[in-house]
Image (tube, rainbow, N blue to C red; front, side):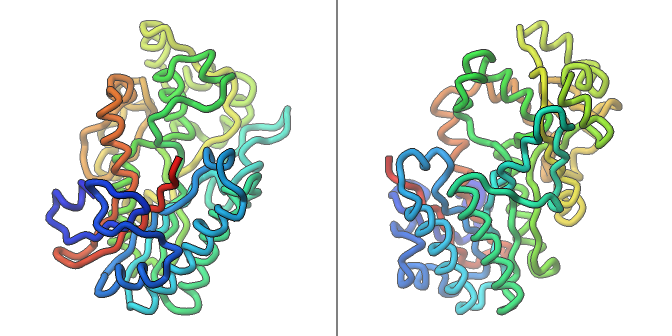
Length: 338
């Protein structure tokens, strides 16, 4: 919302909770409310969801109500209102068990062609919502783009085996190599998706920082990740020693954003910012994917964020974007209480 308002777009924010970025307090499952919000709108950015952490707090039915029924209500309202572009914020969690191959197998090279194997109600309902988007494109001609975003939250890892062994900045630096993305890059991907939705029609895209790895690295990544990282990013070792950090011994999956870079034009503005080795000049993070600015955010900046700054950055995750200059757009951001 901040990004759009700074650009002088006419934006409508729909959220279950009041905030400085909420124009309408309501639920995407409320069809009458949604219909009012999308009236006269050119584009919709649908970020509403119950997330993986909510699994411990909410029944499975609540995930169906928000992630599936809410998406259906929003798609129907958008289609009926003649909305020209619909972007759905999905998640790489839809891949589920496909992300962790059996012991002894190479790391999984995850592209849009990888068959999802959802492992919990979050992944199941997000995949179902993706399929609804595809159906509305096929049946009603609604241009829909699905963005499967990787990790971008600022909180510490919820796995005690990881958070108990590695500093938070160390974890995030490691993850940028294969499963994390900057929030600013996520916003850029949404802006580009809205701009190109009409020409694309329908597409699913992985949105994650550009990995320095290649398909022929996957076997060794599973058995000796530090060796592969040292080969692909020779600058990293000295910086990690200086910080007292260490690389994960094994990496089990690699997200590949090639399709998003090709179809959406995502990441092209910063190709010159990477070193000859394929990693960012600052070896704290892998080559990222910023598409609208050559200024690269690094994990060093992330580590330095205080709580207030982190909260402000997180607000960008619920941004909506209008591909026109002064037209109305509805934002869907279902934020659960608790």
